[in-house]
Length: 219
Image (cartoon, rainbow, N blue to C red):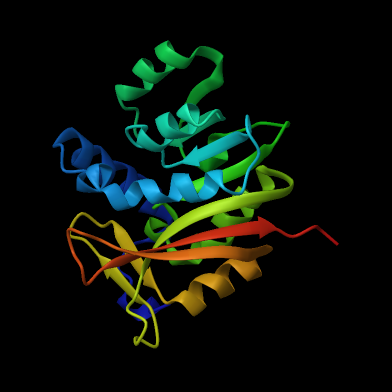
C-alpha cells in the first residue's frame, strides 16, 4: 500500500482528517455532495434490503443519502466527523426514524444491529494501516447476513495497482483497483454480490466503484 509514500502519522491521522473535512465543509468546498453519481449507491443498496430496514450511513455529510433512504422507507442512523446544520432539519422532519452521531464509526453503539451499512466515500480516506480494522467495525455493526454498500475511488481497468494520494491538508485518498477492493472486503469477512463502475461527470477519467457485499456467517 505504498508505505514509502505515506507521510501521515497514523496516531495523529484522525485529528488531521477531522480538521481537513471541517475546513472543507466550512468553506463550502464539499463538491462531492452535489455529484449525481454519489446518489447511485443509495439506489443500489435499496435493491438489496427489505422495506423499513435499519441503515447506518457512515460519513453522512450533509445528509443527502440519509434523506433518500428515509424517503425510500428506511430508518437511518448517520455518523460523521463533522456536525452539519442539515442534521437538525432532517431530525425535525423525520423524528425517531433518524438520528445522528458525531464522531467516527466507533462512536456508534447499537446492540440491535443494522440490516445495512452504507459507506459512500469514507473508506478510501482512512489510514491504510486501519483499513481492516475499519471494515471489521462495519461488519460488527451489522446483523447476521447484513449487507455493506460501499463506494470507492477506482483506478482505470488497465492499471495493475492502486494509488495512494495525500492532499496538502494531510487527507489521504486511495484509488483502488477492483481486485484490491474485492480482496480487502473478502479479508474482512464480506462477499461481493453486486458491483457498478460509475464515471464521474466532473472528471470523466476518474470513477467510483460501487460494491454491495454481504457479511459472511462467522465460523
